[in-house]
Length: 320
Image 1 (cartoon, helix red, strand yellow):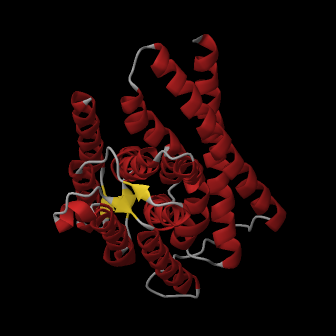
Image 2: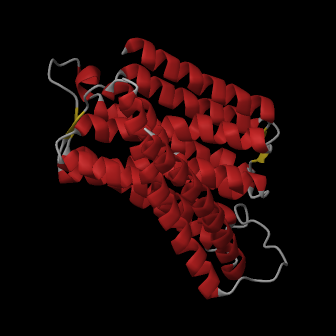
């Protein structure tokens, strides 16, 4: 027990250090090449912080554990939208640009609607067969991912409605930017893995069921990098980075990770109920509605998002 507690603490510390370095490196990259911070958040930061979900879901699909693969993504996206945005807003009210409200968050909402439309095909069609994410569904999700990336790179070419003002601070050397980004991603992935392992072992030693571990610790643990990165970015006044990380991670998780995993092997949707997808959609709707109010997510709205997540977890535990 003591060893697992130390592993969990070490993992959390690595995640926090990694998030701090990744944020600094990404901001330095944005300033040096005059790339909007939102774009950096949607791509480099989102990709780096989504690697734990990718590893867990890919290995789960290869090892014939599709429920874990799909459940990890659904749970992670719910955690991202409710807990990460909520905690970031509690740390410091988040400013949301008009472009993000009108384009980026609706993309995340679209992904949350597309996934159950493809995954719950048996429910939609009314057939008795089990629902499955087929290879065709995987190709469709990857197609959405290509469209998302094309849109994101169009922002990097100087879309005046999306570009953020580049600060006149001294630019960070390129070598230092690369070192910060690489060390940051390594710290996030390694720390996230240690945290999930240590916390899972503690839960098992206390008699918590595997189902509860999968629905809470695995999803929350693989999202720990996003949580640390967004909270630290919000604390440093990098609202665009914090929001871009959440939106980008949500889109990477559904379009890229599940798309790639479904192409490797069809994924039966096991143990994921329509209520879980409903909460996923509700989370994105609340995120969008709160962002529309004066284009900021204030502390009260952040508290509401956190409370909704706590209620969802309580519901899951009551169903086990």
